Image (tube, rainbow over all chains, first blue to last red; front, side, top):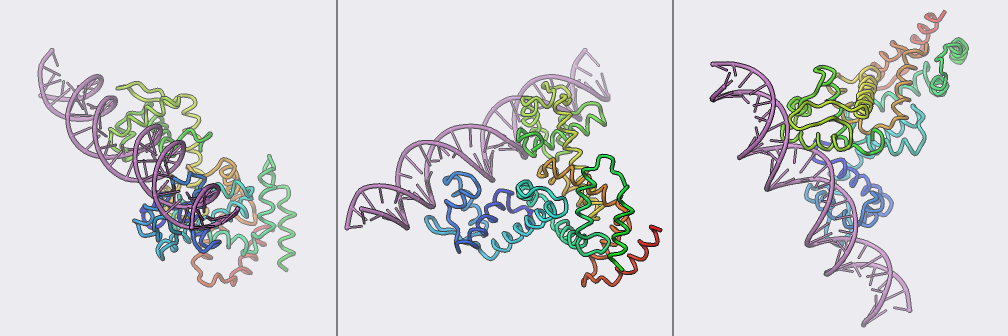
Length: 166
Length: 166
DNA sequence: ATATAATGTTAGGTATGCCTTACTTTTATA
DNA sequence: TATAAAAGTAAGGCATACCTAACATTATAT
């Protein structure tokens, strides 16, 4: 999904965690990878060997782990997709933080590059275009919770928009 | 992901295909499931046994396959998530049909129910709110392709909006 | 400096989910 | 109705990816 299908969703998660650990601790250690992925220590070794064989990490038994240039590039891309999707869920759909985080964790492996770029642009568009913007998104939640989907507030809203643009 | 995590992404795909085949042919047959999932005939049997054991399909060797009530409920939910995501990709992000289809196929297993409902509402909101609407979405693509993301056309756009609301 | 704790690896087991090949059942046709 | 084709199943194999328990290495603390 990242470049071709060289990496399973699982291995993508490894890379994402290793990047995070590198940023915090300079290097990653198996124990912490296990903790972050919520799997057992013994399960990590296999993943690390696979990533090493594919050239994404520098790995020697009993030593620390770092990303190769290729690994870093891919890891950053995954983290980017994660951020964009979480942003959309949080700021546009206004999903709660925990759900947004969990869903972003899964969707990041499923979305294609074109859609991610378009999504980035769309979020920007919403908050840039004078016809939309922050208050427009705020009204969205109100629209959602209104059973009748009434348009009774529309005139008021448009009046406010008009005067704000004068 | 559908109800709990009783079903893998894979088995969810089986259900989705079986629903589609039921709608077309009244029943599903292993050969056609294999064709739709692009796997070999021999691979299907295992999936069918798993779905049968979990109570999603009515399955007897050498016979046709139908969804149970539970299976139909879940299958329809998956198909719904698929439609909503594809709709968003097509109509909002304006991704090409083929990519939208493929990406929806993957994302349908990753998204949560809350986000799907919010997404449904959001798509509706865009095409209902007088501040947004069809021409607003059309302008989005233009915004995307503009390198500078300039706001030079904004005044013109707002004028048109104003007069359309008089 | 050495015992102990923490960390890492190995080996064997389980489950999913695909493959292929060979065999069985059903369907169609001659 | 017999036989060939099509559809379905079974068995054995492979890859992923997790588990646990036992063993190895490294780090810590006395």
